[in-house]
Length: 136
Ligand code: ZN
Image (tube, rainbow, N blue to C red):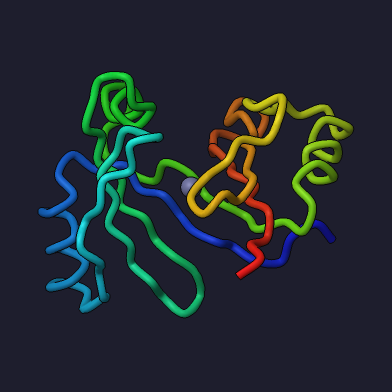
């Protein structure tokens, strides 16, 4: 087994403050203060649930992948992230299956953790992130 844990779900939103207010006040879910993530060109607010994070992602520039997603599909689930023990092994398994990766090599995310994306064309319409287990 490559993964038994969803690390987070990313949701593309137009206004992170407004959407954070919905989760906080309508659903009673704890939401962090939005923070700027320059590498992805987004503002992010985190919903730290005991079964994994939910990330609210608002684009802050036109180059952001989240901006393109919102323009094409509107607000909604952007990606689901599975935690894996070994990112290179996970990527090899995806390729061996015949599915398409977006990343040829792992990229580095928050905290230096290695990650790679599986193309939604190969994953039944869902963008899948594979995230190597952190060492914290
Ligand atoms: Zn993610």
